[in-house]
Length: 398
Ligand SMILES: *Cc1c(COP(=O)(O)O)cnc(C)c1O
Image (cartoon, rainbow, N blue to C red; front, side, top):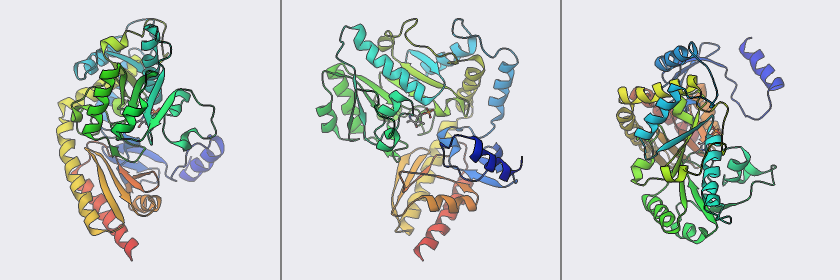
């Protein structure tokens, strides 16, 4: 199938749920992707903050292949070693004591929401099932998670949604204090709102949220699906804040492109999950967990966090340099390699112009350019994008 017929057929046979750019990708290596016509692109999207170790990572592919030759799947009626090793790694490197595996971010958040509610049910506290979430948040597309998402466009057309979610403006301590009541079982938030426009929570806000949850016995849930696994320069973004949640969700980069999600919790909160209370057929299968374990080990072995911190700081400096040169840039925000640039003009034409010049970037919330490259991106590749953007912005000013 050539490129054009792939696109034509796709438009006929696939559910029309995505607005796609007319490129068919065939292969990748590091931060570079190659399309069916042999054209190369430097990738600052990483499959939406997923391929942190770069495309077609050889050692992850080898771990996947080796396990695939031994055993694909037996179900969670039995034990398998890779699942247990991956859970142990996560427990050893985080606040958490226990892990539940699933297949996506939305499913990880579903597990978190169910676990939070079940905690109070088990205590006989049957009225305590509401969850306070943030405006402009994004938690997924299943019914519970779109109900938890503070963006009207995600929910529109699908009502009635799941009951019990109350929204507050992000980073507003007073609003949070006012909203958490004796009916609230959990507070759910992203430390950096990704889809919401790369908005960082303030330290004061997260400290206040933790304090409030402690005072009221409310469960604090961090959705680290996008911020986790090194995206912000630490393994988990909560480490920047010195505040630990009771429950954390992971997905995106955990499998470097393979479908896996995880819900992590401390011992006390996880007690509410007992045999039969929650499950996933494919959750934590040997093949995927063996690959994810190699993702995490490789990050440690190759000092990916340390390197990506430096690249992130450099990248932010360069974006700020651009801001000083071009009036149409409103601000530069973000942390690690999760960076954003708010424009005074729509972002999509800029994304398209970058693509023509061989750079893939993303736009969210109409006018916020989002840069979430593989963590292995190099300074030279960053400089290439900066030059490309500098040219594009200069043309805009004419
Ligand atoms: C992507 C994302 C999700 C949803 O993950 P899926 O794997 O698409 O279900 C949830 N929360 C955050 C913060 C995300 O970035």
